[in-house]
Image (cartoon, rainbow, N blue to C red; front, side, top):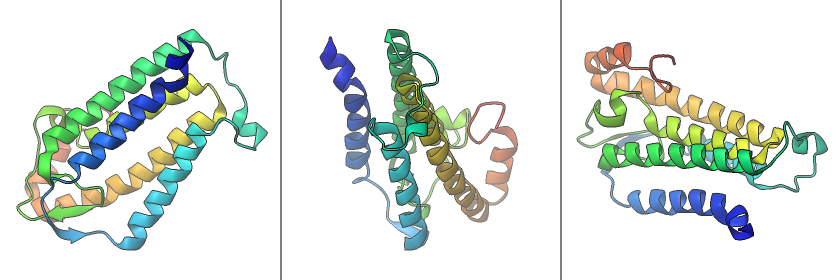
Amino acid sequence: MNYIYDYLYFVLWGGFCVYWWAMGLKVKPAERQESYASRKLRLLMMTLGTVLLCWPGIPVPLLRLRLYPQGVWSFWVGAAVTAAGIGYAIWARRYLGSNWSRAVTVKKDHELITTGPYRLVRHPIYTGILLGLLGSALAVAQVRGYLAVLVIGVTLWAKLRMEEQWMRQHFGEAYAEYSRHTAALVPFVL
């Protein structure tokens, strides 16, 4: 049983990363791409969030402050939420297909996807990732976990804003209409 506690989150997120890398090999070429500096800044912020979430010995006592008792319930509820978030992000990634990119881009022959998980929110990959991170933070039960969600959430929000601008420019009224009827991250809310 200790192996489950030691490795479940590593397997969930590690599997997600391997899948993401493999699927990134099958994408359309970019017609337009965000700057190198923008991509590197986002990578830095994502790395900071990952370190906050994954490093239990972080040398800042305030970040290790326990918010509630860590136990079996927080581990398993967190694992369920993490798995649900990762599953949702993978579903959205599969649905987006070759239109996906790790950087903000407009692809050659870019298609506007508005069905499947994109019927519920405009950025379901981000929704899934944030839900997965929230589940992991719940299991960690420390300030650092929720700070990681905040850091990565703000980073994804900045990327989302850039993507929104580019999609409005590329798809015009079709994207404007889509965004009037579909929330960005949380169905019917945000």
